[in-house]
Length: 231
Picture 1 (spheres, rainbow, N blue to C red):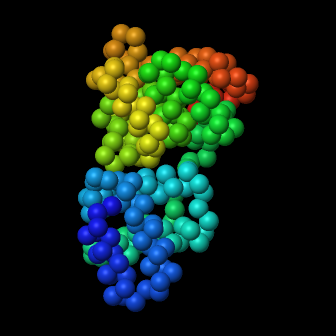
Picture 2 (cartoon, one colour):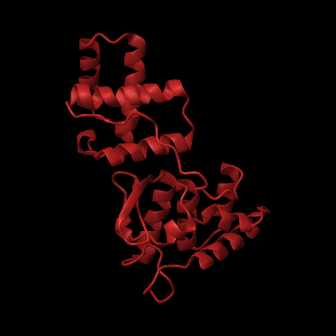
Picture 3 (tube, rainbow, N blue to C red):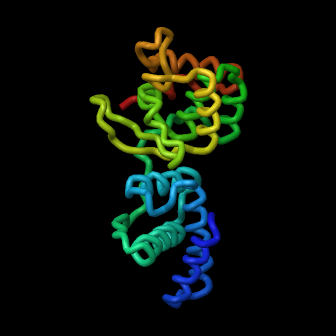
């Protein structure tokens, strides 16, 4: 975070006579927020971008009501008070029920799963699915342009091709995708099939998971993957 931006926040918080506890809390929230989107400036962000960030926070570690209020208060201060931009978000968004496949018990399972994969494409696919909480159908239907690396967002489209919503792009998934882009250079689809004319099928993506899970010693029933990814 640049020093001028930090200095601006401190000056405005003190000018409006916020107490020292709130000054410290708001600075922490806004520094993390600006760092997440760097080098994109907070003024350039849309409401969709901000909602994606809030969803990322909630998925990383569910916020308590007090923490959520602090985050929203800090963002409202930045946009409404400092920039004079209306801030309409009043609640922290939550993931849709049943959205994330439930075959992995915790982060150690994810690390074991990813570490068992040598194929760069397969590593990128499964890291994206599990770290970003995507369904199989959503992941395999992505196009290269749907990955917004600067804003750490994934643009997920509905079956008719129109943009439906965004999901946060975690650093772990971004790193794997960067390796993948260098080696495969996908054009039409992010995860192209064998002939390049279509994307990987959900069935094939499921097989990739099953093989990786077997190598990693993850014994949960593979059927739970298809249950978690069905609409």
